Length: 405
Image (cartoon, rainbow, N blue to C red; front, side):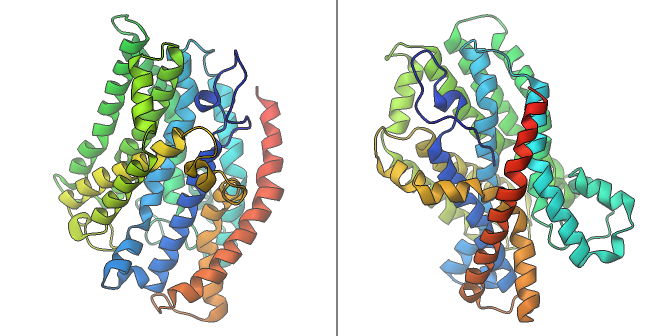
């Protein structure tokens, strides 16, 4: 969901774009993740994700797109923090960073909240507490709410945005703690980078410990939507950010970081094959019952591990693309994928509204089938709403970035 403005190549003396700029291949990843979530939700509402067979199993795990978004945020937002520590770049201005995040996320989100509440939750329009909870993205922590599940009708997917925003707020503190740990004991850039990666390993382990805490001494399902459970996904992306900063902190072509980068970039197809295999395993019963949440501690742990592998392995080729017009760039950085990446936030925001509007217009019931027949018009509606939101809300809102520099 994060965008920057510079191109993927930098001029001599400038910070490389992959360290602190726009990687156009990541637009394609953002588009893939946004539409994977849309397909998953349409498959769930139509009942296709509950059917027996391999196709139903694959559709049932489309929620892996959420960890992909989380890993992407970890990569993009932690890059300048990692570059500041390893390259000696200027420190990140936290006030400006938080303001940009708020301008990027809140205006379009607030619009969708108002529309959804006006259409489907009119009985609660006078409930000030609910408005405050939703507008501040604190619905994940409202365990005694009037709505059923993750949020009011049309807003259920926003639980993941709540986690994202919590990460935005926590990131400067996490970055400061990681930097202090990396500097401990001195050492060169290689030592600092290795300590950063070790610190991120500890952050990732928090998710697995949190999953155990969710089940013991008793099962508390609401903890699954709290930020600690998703930290492993953010940490995976942050680790790639460390690698990028590490590579450009040392000009020696034989440095450990540059050798590692060359090795990781050598075979993009291998990374995507591993991601596909991990996804196929995640679609098996090892991750629990379809569409019914996490129904056991072991299924929860397997889901964390497998979804992390999918997210990381999908991101590596896009983060370290081969030079020139490689298949990776042709697939992920073409004009269509770039456009879909730009409007992907709106696709995420509007998809449940589009689903329910279409189902209401056609008088369909949940789990009534016709997955492909419904997917086409719902996708068209979502694209239209996302494009209008990008044009008339998101882009104008970004002008507010000038207020805080």
